[in-house]
Every structure is written in C-alpha cells, then in structure tokens.
Image (tube, rainbow, N blue to C red):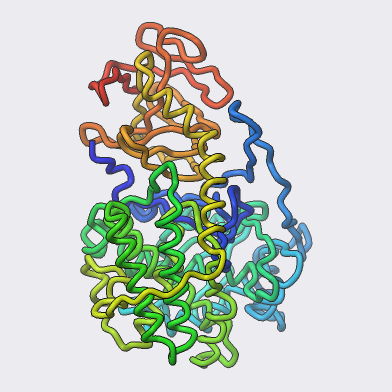
Length: 555
C-alpha cells in the first residue's frame, strides 16, 4: 500500500476561476483562486489531456448527502446569430476591432458573462500573438511561437497561432484524429504541437473578480491554456514518461491531513505574503526574504511530512503558474513587452495579499511558486534549471542562504484562519466522518474498482478535496462523482466520499459496503448498489485482504 494513486506525475490539478465552483472561496485574493471545485483529472499520461470535472456548487444540508445547489451568477450570452458558420465567426473575430485582451479585461469589471465563441477567438488571437512568441524568455523550452491553439465548442472550430487565425471544423479535427476534449488536451496539428480547448457555452462559467480587477474571462482562459501548455510540452507530461522532468518523477501527494490544522495554513500564507512584498517593494527585500525564510523553516520543522508530500506539487504547479501568469501579464500589459507595465499588472491584478487561509495545501502551491519565481528572477538566480532536476522547489531556492528572521503576523490573520479551519472541519466532517466510520466498521467489506478497461476513456470526475486520515490507507476523496466502468457494468457515484490507493500494483477506487444486505447486497459473484449516491450492478471476485478487511474486486 503506497498511496500511489496520488503519486506524481499523475496529478489532479486545480483550475480555479473558470467555473462557478463549490466550497468556500480562497481568501488569498488571487485572480484564479475563486472556483474551488473545478479540478483536472490526470493530464498527459495517454495524450488524452485533462478532463474537466464540473462539481456543482453545493452546501451540505445534513448527513443525508443531499446538496443545495447555488445558482451561478454568470449567464451565457450569444453575440452571433444561431445560424452563423464557423467561418463567419472566425472572420468576425479576425476583423473586428476593440476586441481581444482589452475587451476581455473590461468584461471582468462588471457582472461576468461567458463570452461567445467569436469573443474567445478574438481575445485568444490577441493574447497568443502578444505573449506566445516571447514565452521562451519566461522559461527555457517554453518557446510557444509555433504552438497551435485549437478552439472549439463542439460545433465550430478554429486554429490560432502567433501568425493569426485559420478557420477549421469539428469534422476536420476528427478527420485528423483530434477530438474536442472535455476541456483541454494536448494534440498535434500540421505536424506541430497543439493544445485543444473546448469553450462550449455552459461549460466555462465565470464570476466577477475582486473590485477593480481587470482580468476577464478570455484572459483567464488564456492563463489556463498557457499553464497547461507548459505542463504538456515543457514539463513533458504529453511527451511520454521519459520526457517528464526528473523532479516531477518523485513521489508526491496533493492530499491534506484531516482534521485540518490552522498552523500550516497560516505559515504558508505568511510565506506567500512575504514573497509578494519582496517582489512589490525591492527596498524591503532583505527583510521580507528573511521573514519568508523564517516561516518556511518553521513550516518545514513543524510539518515535515506535509512538506515532503507537497514538494513535487510546489514544483509542478508553482512553475506552471509562474509561466501562465507571466504570459497573462505579457498579453495584458500596455505597451506590449513593457516590463514595468507587466510588473504593475502582476502586482495589481494577480498577486493579491493573503487575508486568510485555504483548506487544501495544494492550492497554495500555485501562488507561492508564482511569487517565488518572480523574486528569484529579480535576484538573478539560476533557479529554472534547478527545479527541472529537483528536489528543490522555487521557495527552497529563493530563501536558500537567507538567515531567518521573524516578522509579526498581520493583525487578525491567525484568528481568521483559526475560524476558517474550524468551519471547514465542521463541513468536511459531514462528508468524511461517515465514510471513515464505514471503512473502520468490522462488518463492512471493501469494493475495489480498477481503472476502466484498456482502450476505454475514463469518464469525467469531480471531487471537492483529497485528504489523508490517520489509520486509513491511501487517500480519501470528498464528494466524489464519476461513472466507474468495468467489463461487467457501470458503478455511478454521486457526491460520495470514497477512498483511493494502490493495491498489488493497481490503482483502485475503494468503497466500503455491507455485503450482507441494505443498499449493497452481495449475491453470489455479483453486488448491487441501490442508494441515492451509489448505483450499479457488478460482477466481483474475492480480493486480497486490505487493512484487515475482506475485499471484492469489480470485474
């Protein structure tokens, strides 16, 4: 039992700010940290890319597992006629003035509405032209000047490069073996690396950002596209296991210990705040770096297991966030290429101070990596080659050799995080505690559901958190929703807390059940589930003992 279902480079990446997510919004005030339930399933392993898991905005009403959905504040708008062809829309996007990043940025200041397809094309065309030809200056190997962006909503399609827009079609994409992805995936187009994105209305949803924030929906999408392009083709996840950075082949996990503790969330918030200030005010940099080193040393000393688990994520998510956000600043700054303007945009729009905590350690990897990378650039450190080989994170490198020195916490920050963690534990307990009790109940057995059969594409999944629990092996997935396909049938989980771990070299989704009756009776070699959160009828066989419990493996 190694818990390797969460071993990197098989990652679940948070993509925040693109959907109306569930859970509580991050208090870090970051432009991309609003949607808490938008997660990406493992990307790059089979060139299928990331699948977007859309988990509804939910608020628990009790232990029954029922959810109260919140109405999305964003509404889809259509600016093109219903009968417009893909060519019409692309031509409009290419020739219309006043669109692109400027229009996208303006869209972020009011009640956010999802752009029409033509708006995506216009905005992304402008952003790609401004930023991708110069992305190689951000990180070695990140020259995206020849990269192709395939944009489709399932009905129309276009190919965007630094040179401009070429209309295409979904049929042409399929003819070339490029499927419209669930959200985003690596691809190949005209012999060039490509990124395919699905902009179907109703799939991407947006909420207004903080007051005064100018980053809008299209620019947010450009950020995520560039973030994933970096993962696919620079970190190497779309190029095969041998091409993945050595630092990202190490073992790591995104899961957070449950019950949550306030201290590590405070320490990581303080690390970020001090790095941000070191970037914002160079004249205070020595003192700010000394404070960041203090909080980093304290976090590593008091929570060494968390530090070991999250190091790979700090490298993966942190460097990709640095590239994605820096490309956004390139695209948005006026004039293009103005370093002073880019710096101002990063500080004013993308690097808000942390005024509270998060409820998941991996959410912190993104902003800490971004801030550490920006400071390392200012210091002239050769940090980019170092993170490729590891094991050092951007944070490790920027505080190396700095003598730690304590600075006071912002007034009320500890109290705010204490309150947030207490509330989060109460809410998480409603989902996790019954599942943990069922796992530990000596009367229950465990259903082990393997990955789908070879050649079968996994179904989209959603979950609202990954947790490590004492005396429970592997990882607990909170509010897990997915159709699990095996040869003998389909098991559908809806907002159910389940477990995940590797057993005898196979990654399993693990579900406790009562084989003697109730909603999951076992009859011969079949088990049938009829509860509101788990349905299906599967053939099973006896499996190995796991944590002292009988198991049945779905066939």
